Amino acid sequence: MDLGHLAQLCYNMTESYLQITNGTDVINGTQEAIRITKDQLLLDIFKKWNPFNDALSFSFNGGKDCQVLLLLYLSCLWEFFMLGVSSSQFDRKYHKFPLTKLPSVLISQEEVFSTVDSYIAESIDRYNLDLYESTPQNGNHIDMAQAFENYLNLYPSTKAIVIGVRYTDPFGEHFKPLQPTDSNWPYFLRVQPILHWKLENIWSYLLFSGEPICGMYAKGFTSIGDIDNTLPNPYLIINSTNVKPQFLFSKEVERSFYQDKNATNEINITPLQPIDIKLIDSFEDDYYPGWFLVDDAKERAGRIKKQ
Ligand code: FAD
Ligand code: MG
Ligand code: MG
Image (cartoon, rainbow, N blue to C red; front, side):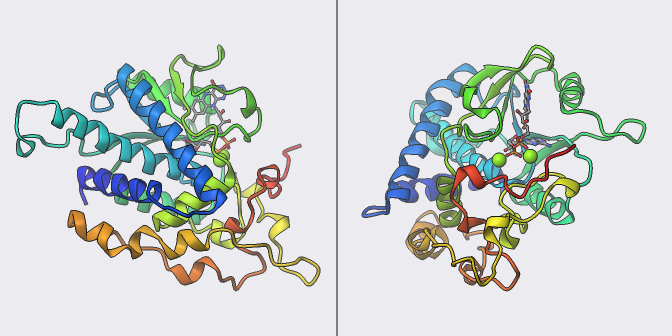
């Protein structure tokens, strides 16, 4: 599917989430979270930098947070494109979606899970990412700041990079939706439009979307770092003393965008391969899947602190 159709699909998916009525508290909260993110992108960021020029880039590491942001970002790209179409004197048929690939960047990390690696490879294809991947120098991984400096040297038109950080991330409470990098980093603007999202919002929107999610989450991981510092979340271990946590997202799965035939038929786009819904509420391993954990304070409980 080309980027224009994908952006349209993400727009339709997001609109159909926003139209859910009689939802749960989580759904109502997520609808509000989506509106705030959309306003930031459409009314602020895309006014500063036209997303169809090469001033904006997207930081992608295959995690759930940047996946949520990617789907919303694409949805906003479609909305931005259609706003341009409606204010033009020329008919819709004379307008072509201006991007074929999304400029994006991944900084390579020490030791990455192969599941994450293959998920990133699938995402490059599925989401039409033009993904720059940093390479180690002299066999050593370089730190993120240096890697971004190299990226900016290669793509000097980049003014701002979109990031899926949230207020509940370490040191995240002081972040702003738009802020420059720190003084010891190469200079560019950080665009952070999902700061206000909570874990429950992330899972609600993702499970509704029906998009394939990185396989680590089905195995009880809730936050993914390097191999040597990441374990499944101990709060999700299945044993006789742990009561099965509540699954909060049944409505999202029941009303999933991919099950909504009207939503997809209407635009005449065949949906991408949906996730196996049966997987959502089942588990065969020693851990409940990541979406059973919604307490933001416990999201990183599977991370081993580096000495
Ligand atoms: P995660 O949830 O893993 O990551 C949050 C988001 O960061 C992801 O959704 C993704 O958008 C992005 N991201 C994370 N890891 C990667 C990666 N390997 N490659 C590409 N994108 C990734 N720290 C500072 O101290 N000062 C800075 O000025 C600063 N600027 C940054 C600018 C950018 C574009 C990025 C991506 C990071 C920057 N950081 C900076 C580091 C940032 O604050 C986080 O520490 C870092 O993103 C790791 O996130 P996490 O593992 O805590 O959370
Ligand atoms: Mg995260
Ligand atoms: Mg990380």
